[in-house]
Amino acid sequence: MIKADNSNLTKRRWLVLLASCVINLCIGALYAWSVFAEPMAVQLAGITGNEMTAADLSIVFSVGNGLGFLTMIAAGFLDKTVGPKWVIFIGGILFGFGFVLCGFASNIFTLIVGYGLFSGLAMGLAYGCTISNSVKFFPDKAGLIGGIATASYGISSVIIPPIANALIEQLGGK
Image 1 (cartoon, helix red, strand yellow):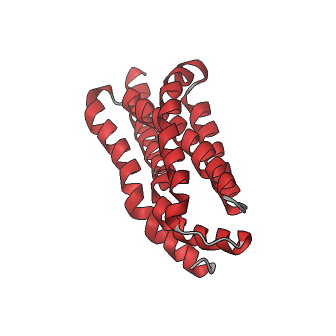
Image 2 (image 1 turned 90 degrees about the horizontal axis):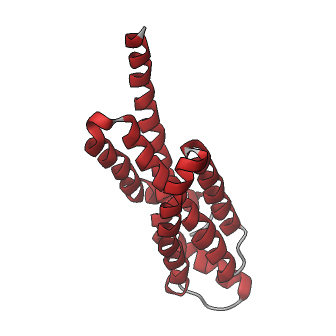
């Protein structure tokens, strides 16, 4: 009986790692800002009538990147309080909402709120829990698993830009 329970836990822990890696691939899209900045500047210039460049929008990425650490710290507390599933779920919803809000942006402030505030803070929530939760399931391979989960976040900045560029070109953003 104990052996059957251990087998189920062994299978489940690989699913937890896979889910964590997929989540990290998604939230790593925050670091693809350079792909979005130029088309967004063109879009906003068309809406506002003011000339705008990608450099004018750099504050958006700075806010998102600068706020994530706050919720990474909070995620540890929330992980213990409400559980990683809920923290990651809330982080995913907020992250997605931030990106959707950016799709309706008509000014820099809306981008700062959507990409910077919502997606930046949400990234910290989800990332903090995916790493710690994955490692909990692999006490025998903590370093390896932490590295794999972290690498999936980092590789996102390689995978997301070509996909985003293709979508932008297909939908007429460039």
